[in-house]
Length: 208
Image (tube, rainbow, N blue to C red; front, side):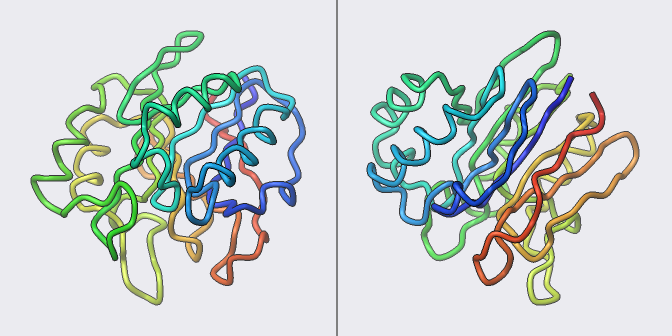
């Protein structure tokens, strides 16, 4: 199965070069401010990509999905895109869970306080998850910004419990890349670099 993942396109999605495949995943920050106009422009582009299935998990810049969740869901599903906001789906035998929540920072969308508050969201991740999609990274894994680790500690603990085959995220542009820990492949798929220019390549999820 050909699974390609991207995130953090920040209204520059048309600069991203994609081929074709089975599943295309966007792990959030498709827009800058999450206005209806920005979201619609992205969804129109996302819909037209040559993949059988498209999955979107919003990010902290995608405000429409937090402020008007029902309306945003209608727009997304009308474009034949699967939206995951702390939800799980099963596709061709693969259990996929997606969450937009990130640790609190400057009152952006889907910000939650570290500790028990955000841990409640990670408890929703099923024990038998194959692909986990979160907008933000786990702590100490592809989460470095200006030499500091910005990822979520509680997410790391849950991922180590669940052991998904692949954990896909973005949010921290400076830490784009891939690493493997145990049986889990970790993918930071942010397309923009730290200067918010499209520089990084989409990543193929190799576990499937």
